[in-house]
Image (tube, rainbow, N blue to C red):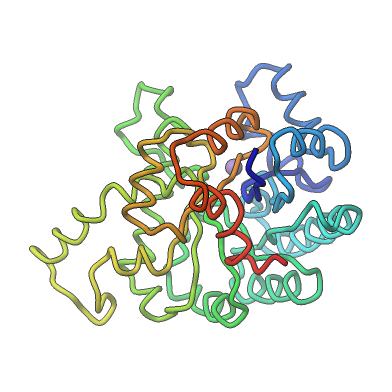
Length: 320
Ligand code: MN
């Protein structure tokens, strides 16, 4: 069994349970009860599950959307700080087994930058996780420059996690099973990442690093097409001095969260490079044993398996 580091592993903080509950509406009570138990445990089932899957360390992040769904921006700042203090206290009880991604009040980009800095410098966290758009605001908008400037200075990755779009796309009308994790979140999250490429965020902040789950939300498969459309229709510009694939390869890394399939893994490695792909589970929403079996047995040479299972994460997250 290869040793693994996992970086899309979730928990719930006491003050943010009401923000999470709408995301499990319509799911059977027994499943919600199991998720709630697993998300609030840091000692027994979580560590046992990690041991059984060979996960030496899990970087924990709040189960979204957390304060990003909070209508009161001031309260979002306070609730995020409390959630981060709670996470830091849990990590300090198992410092070799856990790390943390900060939870940030993106309603206020300056406050989010300050909180990121506090979490990295004072609480020892490895970066942050952001759950999609915040009340219709996307991360490429100029108001977030103050945030990206700090991300680049701190040299920590931002994990862009799927969340609902602000409004429903008409194509999902009458097809509720296509919504959320089936397809809707892929479209929304891939679009959000492409906004950062096309708006020039990565041109302005070349050191910024974004992490996407689900083996890149389809982006690795589509690199040639993005380049071809920009070349044929728009040309390069001040915002995009290079073709999209340049920024996607340079500024984005991927995890295998919720994607236990050899063919897209092969595509991700070939398209993005072997340094850009990292193992993750998405505990407790995905099955740790399925993820373990995939990482241990998918066709890869031994050295590459070690890089994807833990080596790339150790380098990107500066884990020692
Ligand atoms: Mn997740």
